[in-house]
Image (cartoon, protein in one colour):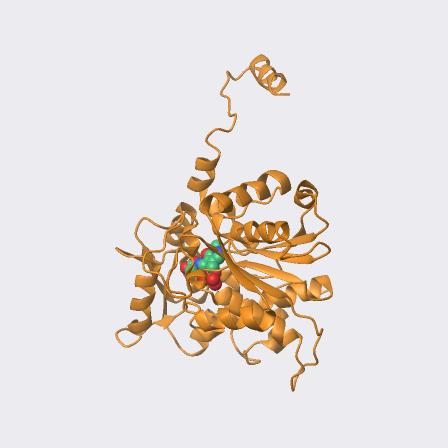
Length: 361
Ligand code: F0G
């Protein structure tokens, strides 16, 4: 068996790369699809829930799938610098892949509104961080115009190569399960990822000049948002998005049409959840399954549990929830949620430690 060297090499025949393209990779993709064991029992429902743990990509989020493609193509086209607006994960990923490629990265982030781990990564990778006094949408609108003003390649998901890379997550799921799931649940922010998954599922279920369909089946796509940042529920962009799940604190999603297409063609829906519901799902995954994702990621499980509860997702279903980012990225929110956890401080003696153990048994 050949060594795994990233998703471009693995799915090369379904991606827009030439035989001699220099691939910029950090070994992204091939993330675990973990079947939940305790939560289905806890809720008393006969459902198979799998989580696609994208937090185990090289920079800790699904963005690496898109970034390996976007940076590979940017370098192929001779670009010396990339730029993105970001709520933190795209910027971390862009920064890392720029280092790998030997080009520069400029990242626009909303001042004070990105999780600590994401800031730390981006600093360490050495990107030029431009904090803006505004939100993600403000940054995005500047980045969209920047090409007229500076020689930089945009690596936000409006770059079509990003979605090409990200569609491979759907391939991996079908390859591993042997077929598409019945339902696929995703957090939706800028809406690139739901668009990319739907593209992947469609490509795997369509005959083309180069590939026969692998399956006829496609999942129902469920797009879940934070209540304070839910333009797909409002039906229009919203001005002042607000949520503790800072990764999806977005009011004007760029892949607006792509997300609606996924919803309509798959027979799916959008729904929104409060920060409390999102954080409860995050904690549940940690404390019942041993899986630590970031708050935004848990929106997929919050939504799945809600829709299993009300029957929108019937018993007997096979469900995949994408966990888009690693919990370690946002230590502040995690510690805040566990501030009442029973931590004890004792003397460094056997007696004191023994007492601490026995007292809590
Ligand atoms: N989950 C996480 C952890 C994210 O970082 C993002 C987006 C999403 C979900 C939503 O995905 O935008 O494709 O609908 N983060 C972007 C960023 C905006 O800048 O890191 P989407």
